[in-house]
Image (cartoon, rainbow, N blue to C red; front, side):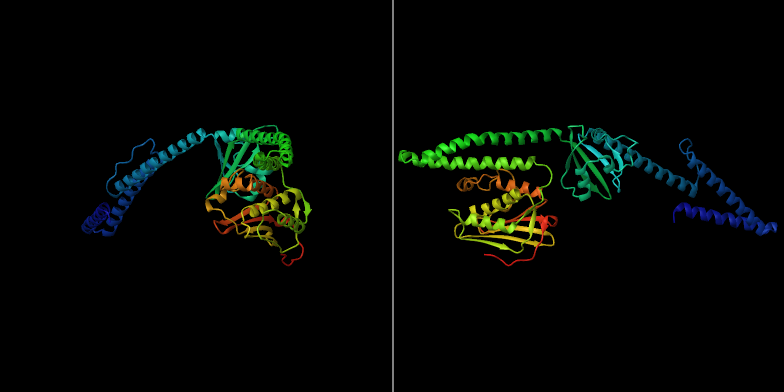
Length: 435
């Protein structure tokens, strides 16, 4: 118990004792005690009134000067009020700093509620998305950004990567939109990527045009080199250089063809077609062509665990399968083994190529699908690789809604698996394995 309370109780008991003594002498003990208690109660109400009046008018009036417990109560209220004022000023300061910071950001920021309704947005978000203050507060963001790609992005709920959309049908401005969850709410980050989109378009156009322009002179050069290399009248000292020229011309032709194919895939919008593909027949043909190569592993097996067919673009699917099988053959020694497998389960269809080749170090695996990326450039020059095969595989798989999984270990071998979604599979009955 605080000293103020001890003093207040002691004083009340002292007043009651005096009232009893006075009432005893007056012969009215009960009446005297009641009168004293009534006066004490009235004094308490007066103090309560002063405190209540001060609380209502504390912005203009000073706190009442009270003693004892009431003084302690007033002092405690003042401490709470000062602490509240300090925190209020701090919150206001932080909010002002937040608004200044978000206003200075080059990106737009939209704060969304649990139902994706707009709670707040900064100046750049309003400019990029054409949002209006007060009018658009409370509106669902997917009702204001009516773009099919953004609708799919919101429906999928995958916030790892942004989605790029056109600001409007009559605008050449491209925006990257990304949702970031925090608690039960979300942030929508908006960035103007028009310059990057234009640069990427210029790069694609340049690569496509340069590749097409290089194809004609390469055909002429290859033709003359082949003619000279096969001419028996050519001096023997030129045989070696001519063969090397033929190999390098063939390698450059492969690079040009790969760039043209990659440019075609990148420039083709939307998903792949819905042609019915006989996967078993296609893989059988690829295996037969692989066995006809001058250099190939001793054992190339094909396992068809299902005769399910695939809905997609037949040239692109053939490019996927042929590139993966070709890579496995290139990097597997003659005494090695390559296993090709096609199977179907509840998750969809799976095409895998496993080899017992040189393998790939773990740090290289995330970058394998980058164009021109080579784990060992000297080995790629020896095998004639262009560095574009897996990039082509990646883009072709994306057009089919599929993904590529890579497992590898140095000195052990690699396994490349393509996972196709169930909606692209036309299932049949299971089959036995084929050698």
